Image 1 (cartoon, rainbow, N blue to C red):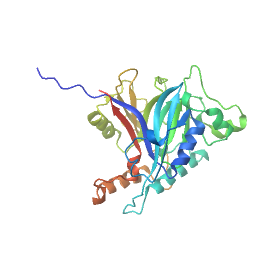
Image 2: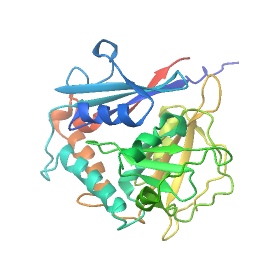
Image 3: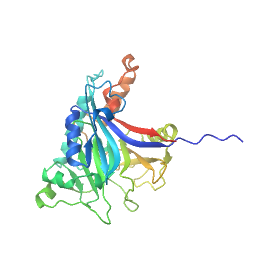
Image 4: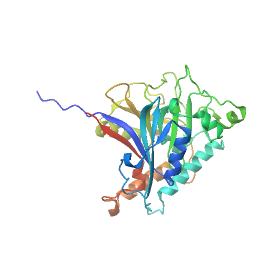
Length: 303
């Protein structure tokens, strides 16, 4: 009897980001999370050698390493539509600003985010600095924009013990938001056990993205009911989830989100995806690192 070799286990150890100002992006993490500076001699990631500027932090929780975050700047590529990564950084920033101004409750750019449990967040410092922040009125979900990048961050709290609420009415008025998750069923929401527990991506076809994760990353379908309607219904967000089995503990989750409900500012997610496709169809793409490639999930093969 011939048996297929076991699928490799891929452990998430961090993420890298294209940043217009790596030092400032890292500074934000150092101030508002349980992070410490990662010295240059311990920095190791794809694109580091090609970067003109770089910075990195190690996020910790209760003294344990959670993940490494790399912020890199490289020479930008201009598409046939005269777009560069800096245009999309501006789009993400302005789209986040539209939420902070309460012009809408959410933006599709926000779906570029990783998820931590709340222990990695220094909310007291966030509130002291009156930082732009999104806190769901339930006190369970918190979001923030990572400066100079196309990414945001999500923190989740245990609803049974440590909900997060501002200590001042003034700050509460600025950051408390109604739940923006259109059509979501919350009956089976769970508090994650892993400090770094998910990575989320906005996509045009969630089924295709999930199949890629299953085929290439050896992911498994997430064993819980989809909280959003599927197939996508008019006026609703739609998602597909997968998970990466780990050597111990719960699996790491991959979320793929179709959001045609909320608006973007300046440039859209489809434009960003087309920008990537345009680069891959050029001769210059062969053997080159493009700025958008610096937005990547770092996985370590452990078995």
